[in-house]
Length: 331
Figure (spheres, rainbow, N blue to C red):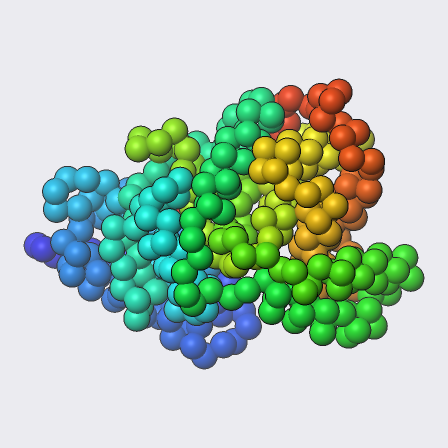
């Protein structure tokens, strides 16, 4: 290449890796510009467009030597980075962004470029969006599970081990009762965790428009478990702009449509969705929160309605547009 293609790391990514004072994180951030330069040279890439990031990853739009567009995505090497690579290699572009190359030691992947400006959140009819997502989810779940991924049983047992300390941290007795109920639901399911390959973060902004297919999935965090554990992100997206009274109805309709399309047992799917609410709350407590977030209680209360209470009557067909910080990182 004629001259080094130096990049500036976005402030948000720097802050997310340095606020905790972790030495490894700071070192990774400091080495990012040089790592990008080395990879551009190694894979014979030319930068094209602005560098963007989320809280965890840096994404550089590039053009390959053959003229095809791609994105260079760099994330600090961790267990979830390895899992994502395993998932991308296993799915091999079937409903998901295609892996073009990777640097296993450095946590970098070269991916096909999708339309970062148009996520599933842009679909005005929510029923249509849910059916698109369900079709993609079914394809991901159908792929044989590879070696090397964590299992939901292990994750669920770790959650249950953390419940006693979390109960002490919650200040409201009602929140403590709710957390115990969620933990009880997980206890009933933990011995049958499932054996499907899950995405773990499949919300509307992690589905982008593409040329190879109309829609493709991005940013997997693969896990082996029950498909019901994969539903919560889709239930908890795109509420902005909706009256508060309409949100439970939207959540119930999405849940009914997803469980019907995927052929899931509703009671088990409710239980594994409560497991997600438990997991989210445990993470919040780790971050110093002393109350259950209102969005978690909204989902839990919505799912306490009788089976089929929404799908027959129809739900809200439009919704507020969710912001798309994750979508943006695919250029």
